[in-house]
Image (tube, rainbow, N blue to C red):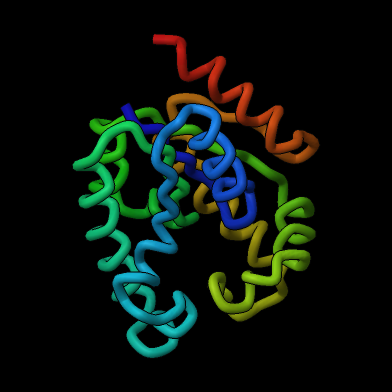
Length: 172
């Protein structure tokens, strides 16, 4: 069984997945890194040169590949739930954990993350907090529908989040 971490940008998916994979002695996979590796360019470059649709197709291919393997902890891209086929494949291949964070927390994390500029291109071109709030409003129902359980990450450290995932992952 795989564990897939879903949620908006900077909700903690990569940091949590990396530590959780280590703790569970499983493979760690970051689907955004997989897309970048296969494309040979950053997400920002993919989007600027080919558009979001091309990025989503590349992401879909990565999800299909990842779902063929087992015993992984997978950090997914924030928009992975936009494609119902991705969600269906992940559900068949494991458990989906929604890492939730509020808009202010996400903004602070994005501004502190040096990778944000290259890996996380603007989705709307507008004000950052407004974009985050708009995207959360649009995507939260998709995360809610896809998840097996959720964990608030605003005031929790990575270790505490990993413990909560391990505890909840053992439930049927």
